[in-house]
Each structure stands twice: as structure tokens, then as C-alpha cells.
Length: 278
Image (cartoon, rainbow, N blue to C red; front, top):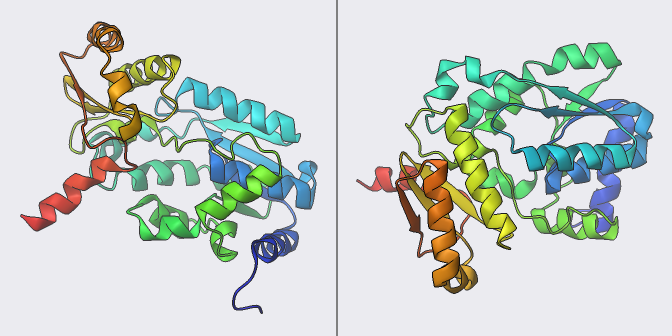
């Protein structure tokens, strides 16, 4: 085996692995990675041998669900929508630092029934090798349930997935990361559907104002907005600032703040590292 495969070689390795599996389900969020895996699976095995599975709880933004439906339809695969019912789990609602473990467990617990119903042989997800160096407790749930990560097996990085996605004409090739809405709520604060709707409305407003990459971090009655550093000056424009402030107060926030460090993935995890230094 080539010890330093090209990106094309990695893709072929991924396809070869899928051929051995035959018929698969893909845990599908509509993000960059899972869309790439779904497309490769559909192209390699034929869309009739692939089922996309999307969890449709309150933690998934409605815009993300609409995009996922459109993507699955464009590939001709069967799209199964399930409610993982993670909100029935008090461990998830308590929002500990390993909240994602309980969320993914709730989703993967439903997969065996889908495999049986559709005569499938394995569940695939979109985990890539860059994810392995991040704090992602959901990976433990995937391992416990035997979920396969073809991008990891092929040693594909996020940048390579984006490059290959662009070559395939996938509209997600340059899509910003869009983790679930619960990831915006500070650890230790109870997750509720009402809080998630506040966050979704707030982020929708920012998107409508032209901020493509943004987060609204939820800290009780305080909203902490993150946009790329290059966008901070624009969001601080008096008219834009007034529009956001008025809308966020209508959504239920008493305080609206702008994070001067700018957008960064996983900023909620910074409190974990900070706590370890104390």
C-alpha cells in the first residue's frame, strides 16, 4: 500500500472500501463531510444501495434540514428522517461537556432497525482525520455502535474533502461548519427547545444580513455573537448594530454582545481547557 497516497488515491481507497460493504446507510446532516460521503457512496454503489439518515430534533436548524432534503433528493438516494429523541435523556438536557456523546448515542441507537428495514450492511459517518485531534465525544458513541468512518480510513483531511467536493460540483464544498444548535448553549445550562429557537432566529437574522459564517453563543439571557475578525467592523456599524440589538431583544435576550476575538469553531470548549488551568 502506498505510504503517501495522492488525494485521488485516497478517494479510490474509500470507494474500494465501500464496494466491499455493498449497501450502506449514511448518517447525514447535510454538512460538508456527510454530503461528500453520501455522494461517494451513491456514485460508487448506486443510489439504490444507499440510504441517507437524518435526525430531525429541535437541535437541527430548519434551514439545515431543508438543505439536507434537497441534497439527498439531488443524489437520488432514499432519505429517512428520524427523531432521535435525545430530549428524553436527562443526561443530554443537563448539557455536560460530553453532551455530544448522548446526542450521537440517541441517533445511533436507532440505526440497527434502519439497517434491518432496508437490508443494509453498515452505517457510515462523515468523520475525517482532522476531527480526531479535536474534542469530539460523539466519536466514542460512533465507535461503540460500530459506525464506520470511510474518510478516516482513507486518511482524508477536511481540506481534501472540500477539494474533492468542489471537483464533484457539490454545493457544500465551501459551506461553513454548521454544528447542531445545542452546541451554542454554554455547558451546564439546561438545553430546551425554547432556547434553541432563540438561537436559530438570531442566527437566521445574521445570515439574512449577509454574515455567512457566524455563531450566536447562548449564555442564559446574554447572546455572544461571533463573526470572522474581518466582519467585526461591519457588524459594529450603528445601523446594523441597532437592527441586531432590537431583534435579539425581541427573541428574548436581555444582553447582546460581540466577541472581539471573532469567530472560531468550538469556542464553547475553551472553558474546558480554561478550567484545567485553574
